[in-house]
Amino acid sequence: MLLARAPQLSADIAYLLEIPESSWKSHPIHLALLKITPPALKAYVDRVQALAKAPDPSPLLAHSYVRYLGDLSGGQMIRRTIAKAYDLDEASGDG
Image (cartoon, rainbow, N blue to C red; front, side, top):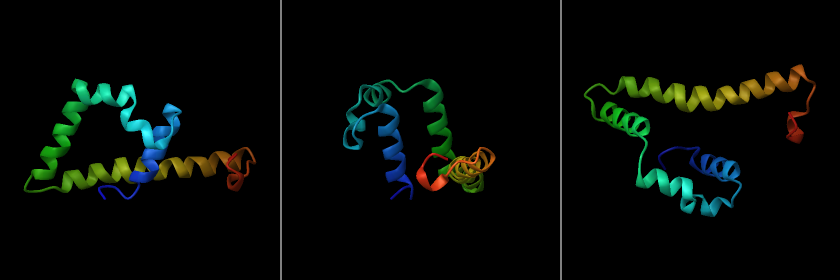
């Protein structure tokens, strides 16, 4: 598995598109991105692939940390802070 959180990311995409998780890969937005990749997305993917093939892949490690750990874990940290500030119950899903 490329990412340990791949199943959760798939569930998030389906949730945002308001469709069953099993069908997001056939959603028109996903198909359009596969057909005509936006230039910025192509540049990003190309850069990540170049870093992965570089003799020193440490910049890719730093990037992965920020994207995968920082963004995803940071959201959990923010959730806890907001829940505490507004006296919300995290366990119920309301926080």
